[in-house]
Image (cartoon, rainbow, N blue to C red; front, side, top):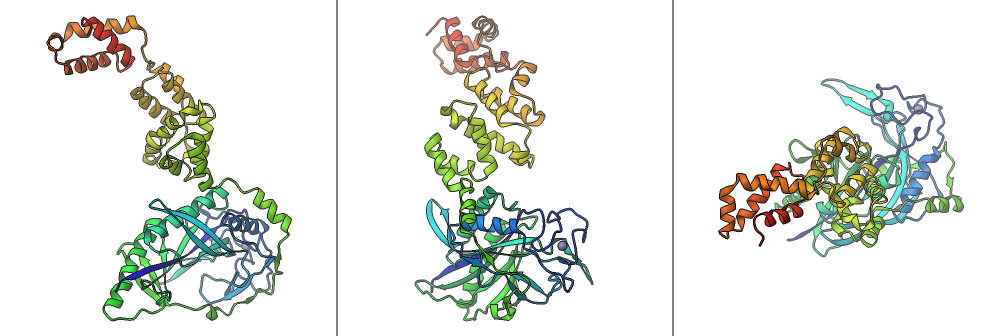
Length: 478
Ligand SMILES: [Zn+2]
């Protein structure tokens, strides 16, 4: 029997607010000593009352709007009761019945085909403490306890590991464009759990839903989904039965292992959080937020194609991060608009290569958009040749110097002075009697060799077309 894979993703996103979700502790805890960003509130002491972080609500509304969700008249927090050492209060304040956003969508582009994935809801909760397991004991760091955590829940409409990866990349790009999260998967500010099941083709009913956790990179999600779809098919083909359970992805072994039988919503005994009033949304406030939404990746990509005439491929990569797209546009402001492709080639070529090699984010590079534009204008005006530009660029990248400074210091500007080139040509002709004879005997490739010698004699700085012209003239024309 042939099966269809069905995946739903739950993405937890730490919001970039200054303080935590329900207390006044700083949410900026990465690299802080353990348990240094804590108070009676986020330590779960009895009798302490929560206070809602308005910025976190605003960021969640913003995200929900960007994902085409409806914002209801009111929203509410619920208590999710469960005992686990990382949940210091014995419950987590979350949203179960009345999330901030619902029924939206996100469009992915898988292999050139657009597909809309429905978003069930976008809701807000608090993060839990971090546990450090040692050989025979565990430690608790409560710095993360109470950090605003937004959850984006998709409908089970993702049908392959590729689509799952595309969905996550797209979602993270949107969050970064909005500036609501760093989206850093390694640091845990963007975490993904997946519900995956299979069903016979054409069937509408899902077989047992299996939740997979512990995937810490896009690659891990892709591999885990691929593994799990295969494993589930294998179980059924061998006549086995699938049970609803939670499994953990083990990166080193490339497999998922059963962790526990999956709990149902009823197990948490959700009830309205008695210490907080419901959120009632003022429509004007919602519309103010909507009006402030930045141009999102998809719209920007389309604009790059129509406004700058860039190929879709270029536009796609340039707009994959807001910082890259901003850099490109800031650079282009100082250039002729028709040179967009030249700027794109450099950004996607040498620039990206050096950024990757040095593990640098574009916003932290020493080359400013103004400096890159200046260099590209030198290339465009043929003050420096293409190959020389690569040398200049590399020097600029590491030193932060301007192109004009590097060109002057290294005497790299192109030689367009005919007399100077003619002098070099004469020397080359005198020193390469055999090649000259070959050329005169009709061997065209001898000319390529002699031209190469002229370029070498001028350290690659001779204007190539002028050099060739003078060379042919000196060789007696043809
Ligand atoms: Zn606190």
